[in-house]
Image (cartoon, rainbow, N blue to C red):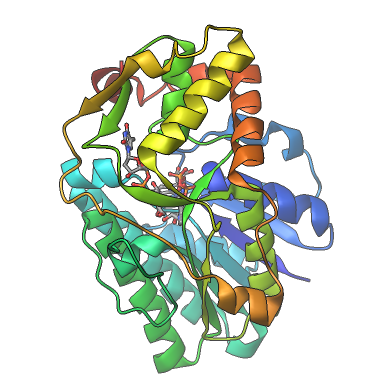
Amino acid sequence: MKSILITGGAGFIGNHVVRHFVNKYPDYKIVNLDKLTYAGNLETLKDIEQAPNYTFVKACITDEDQINKIFDDYNITDVIHLAAESHVDRSITDPLVFLRTNILGTANLLNAARNKWSNYKDHIFYHISTDEVFGSLGDEGLFEETTPYDPRSPYSASKASSDHLVRAYHHTYGMQVKITNCSNNYGPYQFPEKLVPLIINNIKYKKPLPVYGDGTNVRDWLFVTDHVEAIDLVFHKGTDGETYNIGGNNEMQNIELVHVLCDTVDRHLGREAGDARSRITFVKDRAGHDQRYAIDASKIKNELGWEPQVDVAGGMEQTVTWYLANMGWLDNVTSGAYKEYYAAHYS
Ligand code: NAD
Ligand code: DAU
């Protein structure tokens, strides 16, 4: 029987992965390991917390003894590793926590797996990574799996390091590993430091809408459940040692995306057209702001048959609908340990 350790399951993408695996695979035991930093919230998983194949463990991935014990206690057979410090702006103001969690934490998990697993071919260590490891694009071109790494923020450098460690354990010890590098996710349960929920929240409360620089930076937006489907496929059918890029085929300039959110939220709230757009405020640019990310996802399409199902119009509509119906969730996650930081940066 599989006993899968999913790290970071109380975070944005992790909760969708945990819910999907718990519901779709009743024969798997799912162990959700999370430190519950400001970004992790168990309220998000209320609907599955009683499921017989689900367990939550509060732990830090950098704690060697605790992680080794969890591998033993739950007889962990596979790992889907999402736990990370994930917000680029925070990596600029406080880089060391990113290096500890994202690099040392990943190394610690790999090593616990190395200690525990005797036949690597029976086990999978799957690392969920980012397209930011490839650096920044100009107007043309796409990131491919073979694009050389060129991380440019403390966050992306830490994720690049963790990818390299995963590959090192594959080449050195023969561990079965998989890596996916994904573009910007959006959807329900995303912490409102990230652009999409931040803008929705600020529109709702009639606050300024901060757009960095001139708003021409481009991101490739992927609805989170499309990402989860890709993770399921790669976990079950991806090739040992391979990397797959995952993207939404939805490139947009930030300012275009903010306009879509303004118009959608205004419509939902019955406000006058242009009301939210009038509060767009161009603010000081992010230090080292990557200009453009764009993914070539043809490998996962050709080899595993995955393609995103949700276009950006439908996905943003669903996302706005969800946030406006769940403002209580937003209020709760911004009222805990994160309150001061949130108030200082986003009020
Ligand atoms: P998130 O910040 O919403 O969640 C991260 C989770 O990890 C939180 O629940 C947090 O409590 C937990 N965590 C943090 N430090 C920990 C530690 N030391 N020990 C145990 N748990 C810890 O992040 P997310 O947006 O859901 O991203 C999940 C993963 O996907 C990350 O590895 C990220 O790099 C990657 N990724 C994210 C995106 C995106 O657009 N959000 C895109 C590509 C890849
Ligand atoms: O590309 C994948 C990455 O996407 C993930 O690896 C990261 O974990 C995730 O945080 C995300 O990184 P970004 O920096 O692209 O996401 P963020 O939502 O912070 O910003 C999206 C864009 O919007 C970026 O160009 C910066 C800009 N921005 C962001 C904020 C928070 C603004 O203009 N204003 C804002 O207030």
